[in-house]
Structures are given as C-alpha cells and as structure tokens.
Image (cartoon, rainbow, N blue to C red; front, side, top):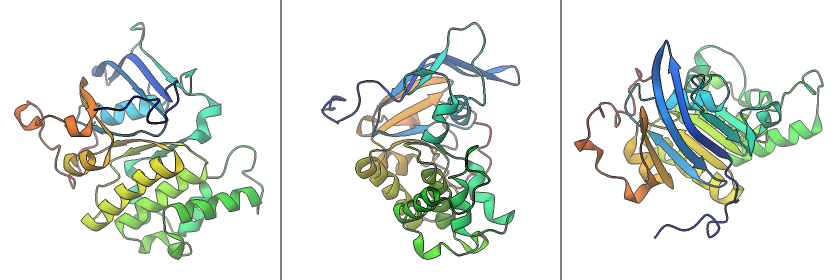
Amino acid sequence: MELSSAERGESATPILQINDLSVARSGEIVIQEVNLDIRKGEFVGLVGPNGSGKTTLLLTILGLLEPVPNTGGRIRLYGNEGFSKSDHGRIGWVPQAGSKLSSHIRITVREIVRLGTLNQRNMFILGDSSGNARVERALEMVDIMDKADTDVSRLSGGELQRTVIARALASEADFLLLDEPLVGVDLPSRNSLLKLLDNLCHEEHMTVLMVSHDLTAISQAAHRIIYLEGGVKFDGPSEDLPDFSSLAGLRGITHVHDDHGHGH
C-alpha cells in the first residue's frame, strides 16, 4: 500500500509542480501536456526511449527552455512560478557532460567542488570560510575525501560522477536533477552511486529527479518511476512498474552504455 505524503514526512506543498506542460524543440512538440508533482524527500526516476523528452523536461525545469506559448502550461518551483534567482542555489544540476569533464580540463576534485560554492556575491572572495566548510561537507557526503587533491583526469567514471554530484551539493542544493549519471560507470560504481542518492534522500532529506536508460537499476533504487514518451505514460511506485517490453517505442531503454541518447 502506498503511503500518504504526510506518512512519508513530505511537505504539503510539492517542491516541483508541472501543469499541462508542452515544449517544442526545432519546431516539433517533444513533450505534451505533462502533469506531475514532486515532493521533498522523493527519489524519482525519469525513464523513456531516446527522443521521448527526458532531458527536455529537465532543461525546462531549469528555465533553459520555454513552454509552448499560449498553451497554459506552467512550472512552479518551491511554490513560485518558474525558475527564479532565489532558487538557483537550491537546485543542483548534474548534466551528462559531467562525465566528459576529465578530458577537457586539468583541475583537482576539491577545486571542482569549490566551483559549486561560487555566486555573484562571493566570486572574487578568496578563502571564504563558509564556502570551504561546504566543500569539505560535500566531499564527505559523497565519500570522495581521499581523492580531494587528485586531478580529475585520473578519476574513474564513478569517482567523476561523485565529484560532479559533490559540486552540486556544495551549492547547498536540496533538489538534485541528474541526466544519465550512470552512463560510462561500471556496475559496482553504479550500485554505489544509487546507494549514495538513496542516502541523500533518506538521511539528508534531499529530493532527486534522475534520468536513466538503466530501467533495472532505476526501478530498484527510485521510490517512484515516471515513464515519459511525449507525455507521461506511467507515474507510480517502482514496484508497480509494468512490463514495458510489450509497449511500442522502447528501443534503447535498457542500454546503459548507449552514448547516442542525447536527443531526449
């Protein structure tokens, strides 16, 4: 039996509310009339075939894409209309590009995580004690303190993902949006990452919305699954997830290492 939001200790007002949202890219509707709420402490998995609108939805939540005009679609974050400057530090964005970081830049883990503390007020202040404490706390939370002074070019895929998640946590985010964090990560590291995200929800009372092609992994880790294919086709507890193999258009959903899934 599914627990009520009060029984799960969640707030009455959802962190994220999406109503009748439609978004177009390159003139074509990618997601249509999406409705969903996400409450504090939930670990939500967002799944669907390539091109189904998963990344588009995340980018729209972040305010980087706009709803189709005159459709009445809207997004509310923390009870406010749209993405505002006040929400900036509360939302931690972990994009697919994070896994490619090591091939482009020479920088240590601690320096990468430190970037998460920068904002317009402290960007030119060196030795900010509050920021330093947040960096150390983020490194501890993702269990990568032993690699803090290691160049990111020497990290494994799993260690690099932990670093990028720590960067988001250093911003004092309480809502993490992750786009395919399991791609390029070996099985033990994948399981460890999922355990980390689960712990962040249960112990730190954070909220996670994660896109993944790995249906098996996400259904075992997430509390709730949203299946997106143009619109929301399923939204419910992970244990109620139907057998999608009988549905059309599911090619690629279980291919964790598919590097072609950029057109969500």
